[in-house]
Length: 343
Image (cartoon, rainbow, N blue to C red; front, top):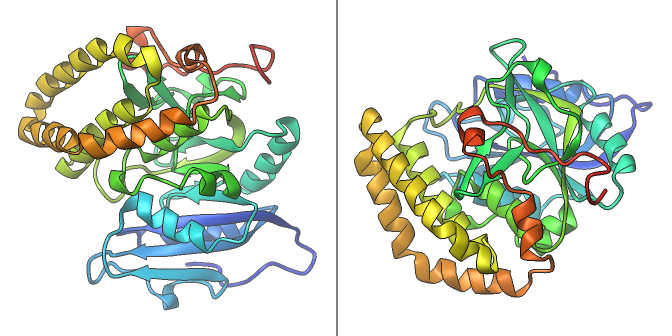
């Protein structure tokens, strides 16, 4: 049951607009909103998009507190376009992207605000994600980008005791992240072509090429169900994950690093295609590669624009990547701690 009450006059409000793109989320969105109502620092606003869920599974005005700014779409816009639409009307200095199956701990926003004081000028922060249904297990500690051109959610499935200290990571997971609204707008938001999956890595990659840093917060935490609307090994998830992974590599890998990493990316893609045979998804995998390459003219045109604006040396991007093959198997995090390079 969603708590319909609003903040009391004594409660403080952070300049944060929480954006929630909901698709087939009736079972989890109530708990998600209840957790936001319980924040020690209330957000300035909560904007929720009903993203074209099937009849009988849609969220309506009557299901939500009056304080939630409700937006409705008759079709599924995807995570990328859905968040872009919500961000276009947001009023906060910061945007907090939150999945409807992610349940923020009471001090989630407060921890983020304290981190802003520790890291002035940092425009993107990630949250520690705990497995909602498995106590003591991590769901993710930021997104890593491997030199093979593969992104992965670091720490997934590892014990909470392995959680590293707060530090800089390659990208923040879009399930629970904070980004300055002015940077989000300057980047043009998410790439609408991605629809969903890897759009957060693409956004972070573009921010990094401009010289921005991303910090993963240890104590800003959410409990996350994960794959609540699409399924981890569904054809939908496989198709978009494979297609978008190639687009991220083509669009963002800078300069000489593109040519150095290209053979490894091709080999990694072939290995993953062979692995997809075990799950009966070789056909889906092939279609994703075919469609990614058929759209290469548009992606490469965007690449030229992105690379023309690059402000950091190529070696700085390479330094933040994971290079060990073991990292892909173990989902080992890569965190640059304060005092290691820039802070």
